[in-house]
Amino acid sequence: MIKVCITDDHQLVIEGLQLLLSDHSEFQVVSSFKTGLQLLESLEKGNAMDIVLLDINMPELNGIETCKRLKKSFPGIKVIALSMLGESNMIRLMLKSGADAYLHKNAGKDEIIHAIQEVMSGKRYLSEEISNIVLFNDNSPANGKIINSPFPKLSDREKQILTMIIDEKTTQEIADALFISFGTVETHRRNIMIKLGAKNTAGLVRTVLEYHLIDPKT
Image 1: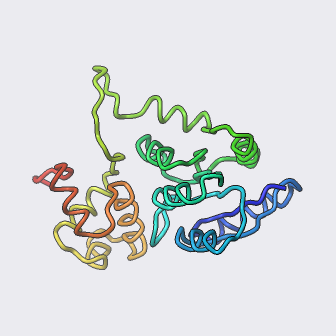
Image 2 (image 1 turned 60 degrees about the vertical axis):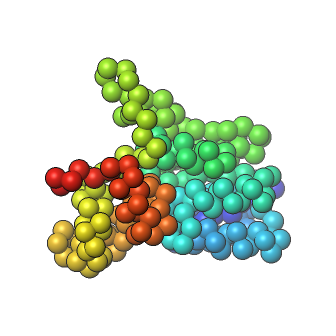
């Protein structure tokens, strides 16, 4: 029986995956966690698992860093990244950190089951959708020249919020100015920090200045 761990900061996602896997006798969900740190602490205590379904966008420790640490200490455990983030650079970062598969969270039941089976047989798995994103991404303009950006592309809203963060606006001030909720701003902030590999606001500022990520006219 394959021992599965689910790590995602959304309880509904955890419950949905548990329900999906409960229909298959070959799988046993042995644990679930809301953060990468909880997952790593459980492993250090000796809790057994064969495969982890791992979210990328999580508080405290994102999925990329979680996967990197997990694979360093427990290389035999398989990791399938499950995320709403579909940029090619983000996928590459996750695979580089050691993930055995990458699935979009809109993946169907059959694809998730197939991915687990493929990974447990020693293969890597990328869905056709994810493979196409990696192969035909927006870093390849029509003239055929590759733009070597070390970071995933920021959305217009993320650029807007990043600019306000650099201007030392608080989360509440950003929420009020953009007419969005405090929680939505926090989610965008978290996504930005994951994409830019920053651990705090100082790291964001340093990265923005070093790579000229924001047009000074904005």
